[in-house]
Length: 207
Image (cartoon, rainbow, N blue to C red; front, side, top):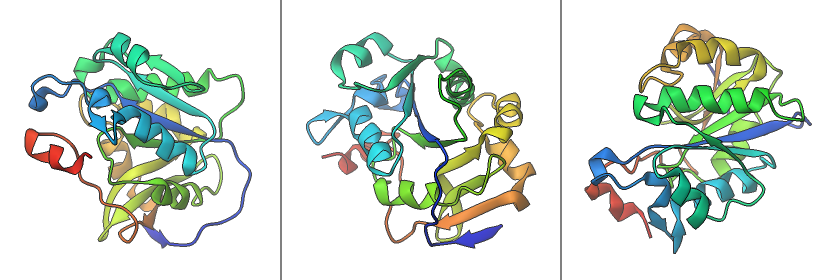
C-alpha cells in the first residue's frame, strides 16, 4: 500500500455514492438514514459532506423506510437508488449504487463511497481521498492510525470486479483484501473520526 497525504489536481467526474439503506437492527429497527443529527435526518448531513468534499454528483442508496426517507429528507439534486434487497447487507447496496452510476447520463470515472452512519468523517476526508484519483483503475481509501476505513474511492474499471464480490455485509472487503497492493492509503487521522452509529450507546455522537 502507498501512503499519500497531499491533494492533487485533476478534472475527472468522481461521484459520491452514499450507502444509506440500513435498517438499524441494533438500534431497535430505526433506519440510520433518519436518525436526527444537527436537527435534520442523518442522511442529509452525509450528502452535504460529500458535496462539500467536492462530489457534485451524489447517488444515495436507500432501503429501510425508503418512502419515509424520500418524504422526510431534503435530498434535492441527488439520484435516489432503491435497494429492495437491503436486508441482505451492505453488499447489495454497493451493487445497486454501482449499477446506478454505470447507468448515469454522464460517464463517471470513479465512485467515492461513504456510509451514512459515520458522521465523524467530514468533508476534509472526502477531499483528501478524492485527490488520490489517478485514473479509472484507482483504488484508494482513507486510513486511520494505519488502518483502512471510509471513504473509499473505486475507479470505474474496478466496479465489475467489486460488484461481483459484494455479498452479505462484506461490501468490497474481499476485493480490497485481494488487491491490497493496489490500494493507495490516504491518512485522515487528523481530520476525521471513523466511529459507526450502530448501537444505542453510539447515539452520543449525534447532535
